[in-house]
Image 1 (cartoon, one colour):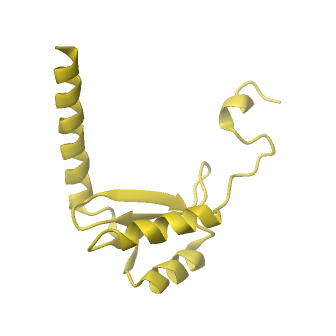
Image 2 (cartoon, helix red, strand yellow):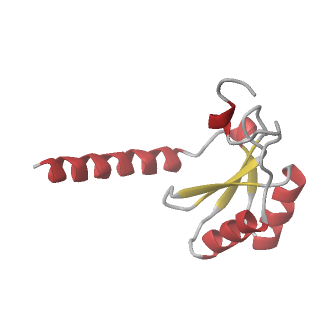
Length: 114
């Protein structure tokens, strides 16, 4: 066992794959929002392939999927477009949403501090 293995959360060297809970979360999340689009994130050395769903206002969620084919099947099933992040990047509305959330967190932190 390596020095940092206990922090990796995967002793066998395998990454955690997608589960039915991941799929259910994505389906439920998309059903509760409008203007949802899917963004396929490729597998990396750290994570499996992931699917990020982004709503019309920039709110987003991300979960693992069992590869690009599974992401295509899922987005077809729920009737949303799918884009590859490596080709198109993330939409500006997501970055704007993140900036708004950061401002709100900072305001809450300052209000709590006094």
